[in-house]
Amino acid sequence: MSSQAATARARALLGVTALTNASLTSWLHGLPGVDPVGADARAAGLGTRSIKTTSKAWAIDTAISMIDLTTLEGADTEGKVRSLCAKALAPDPADPTTPHVAAVCVYNDLVPVAVDALQGSNIHVAAVTSAFPSGRASMTVKLNDTRDAIKAGADEIDMVIDRGAFLSGKYLQVFNEIAAIKDECTADARGGAPAHRKVIRESGEHVTYDNVRRAAWLAQLAGAENIQTATVKNTQDATLTVQTGRTSRVCDLTDACAAFLDPDEDGLLNVFVPHATAGLAVIETGAGSDGVPLTALATIMAREDRWRHRHGTPGHGGGLWWALVQAGDRGRGVACVA
Image 1: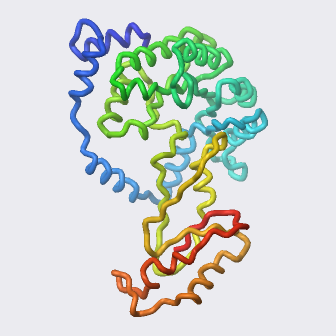
Image 2 (image 1 turned 45 degrees about the horizontal axis):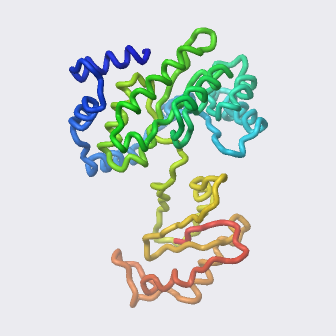
Image 3 (image 1 turned 180 degrees about the vertical axis):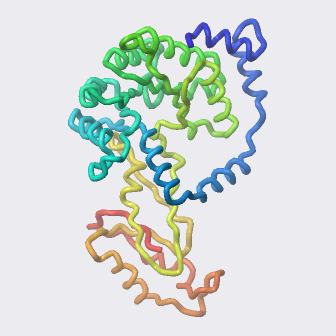
């Protein structure tokens, strides 16, 4: 769908003769509101569902076959991209029946490497463009970004919207940018086949569910084939869930914490534990000594009947036990001791 076709369709849907920012604002803000409590409950309920036996095997294979295997780091190299492509071709080398993934996603300057590594397969090459991940650049830069990726062989363009413009109510600007990128996907298509386009909204920056819905509708009005919720670069809303129980244990959080960090930026990671019976320790895990903090703390302050949790088990005097957990100067990992 060209930008002209997208505009014509949007005018018809909105019932207006001219597509303006005012008409888009009126229509988008007239959409039914989202019930945040109901939406959260629905999402939580879906997370508890499970499937069994052959259905589970089918679901796993289907999920693998739909993955965009991605590397979007400032430190990406040609070697890393080729290794990723090898994994895309054979996700489980020990099981040749495992399906390959749908696509490999890289920055546009590494598209030629991915195209070469995947030659002869039907795995697509996707590229992030339009000033990913911020979306903050001139339209000329965004179009050139997209054009370079397509000419290099990208089958799919993952563009990001300008969230600043969207949150400022400049809906027509965002619409026009999405439509213009779509035109570019058609104009410079390799072999005459238009590049597929995905619109990334970065839902974590939309503040409200109503804005999330508006951004999704705006992308569809502009002709988006697919919509992606996030760039995976925004970790402001990241939450780690650690299941505690009646038995004390050490849970290694190192990899989970590392996944929240941007390797290209300096900063400080704050981990907050809203639980009186769990604490953080910086220790070396995996060396067979994970249980040492538990043994030491149990010796210093044993469980006593005079301190009891609300669920009835002996406690350690409220949060006093975990006040003794300190960061070791030779620690190599972050652990939750619960």
